[in-house]
Amino acid sequence: DIQMTQSPSSLSASVGDRVTITCQASQDISNYLNWYQQKPGKAPKLLIYDASNLETGVPSRFSGSGSGTDFTFTISSLQPEDIATYYCQQYDNLPPLFTFGPGTKVDIK
Amino acid sequence: QVQLVESGGGLVKPGGSLRLSCAASGFTFSDYYMSWIRQAPGKGLEWVSYISSSGSTIYYADSVKGRFTISRDNAKNSLYLQMNSLRAEDTAVYYCARVGYSYGPQGYFDYWGQGTLVTVSS
Image (cartoon, rainbow over all chains, first blue to last red; front, side, top):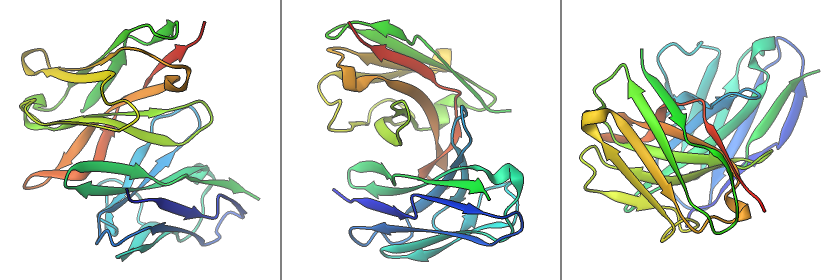
């Protein structure tokens, strides 16, 4: 099975800072990598799909990049409403198998 | 607008059973693959099961294979998860989620319900 790692596990940053989270797969997953935001007590929300595509309605300060085994999620200018845990998720299609990373908790400094 | 509303969670003893339901609205339910995903208290997300739009293709995570059964009723716009032989480690919030679609089912979940809590404890 493909394993996903995320770093850091948590971070504190100031409003307006650029925030970067990395996600690494244990083997090549092409661009089958998605990013979700989960606020406390809420369901996850899809932000980025297929590594770099912004989901409709998601602010453009969120972006994703990468392919193969190494992926990056960026918030270009951190806002107070971005306080959340962010998860990467990979997709294997034979058979369908979905694996989430352990998450990165983002706080305001 | 797309809505997914789970129900059926609660407290159950180890070895017991529970059936979760997810009522879908705001989209053509029969066109979409669906999944169940769970989250243990204070922990990360774990994919549980996946069902094709017709119900003919089904997959499970190894952790629930042989104990959980996913199903759907397209006439009722509903998704189900029958959970048998429940264990303490099955305690979690269970979310139903829609699998994204673009020229075929995709590898992401574009809409999620609010979740229903299942607690397995004696």
